Image 1 (cartoon, one colour):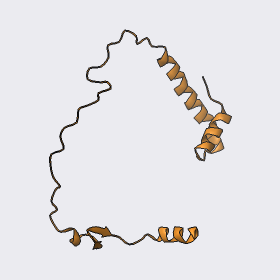
Image 2: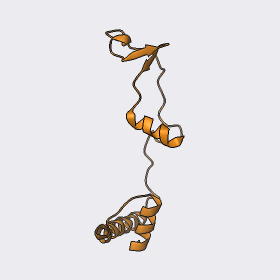
Image 3: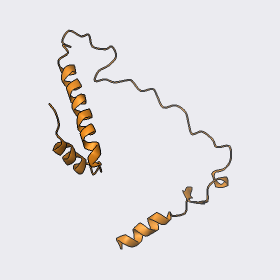
Image 4: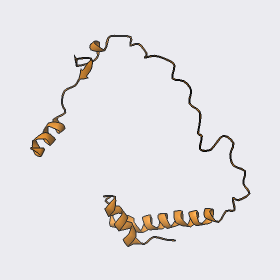
Length: 104
């Protein structure tokens, strides 16, 4: 299997990636080398391989969540710009204000 320049352009367009025209030939070449390597790997006979121990559908067992919250050295009000009802209030970003104006 291999990819063409047109296919790379189409995928880049779908992913909304800007790729410079002079970069396309090297990108096509790199992708084709990767696909050729995948073809080689797919021919490796793994039927007699022993599965890895401890890997399977069960996954890793989780430990009990035991510890409480870590206490802060200073009250949160000492480092937060402002607090309301236990929540930290931060100034609105200028970029967010501009987005709000565009949406209305």
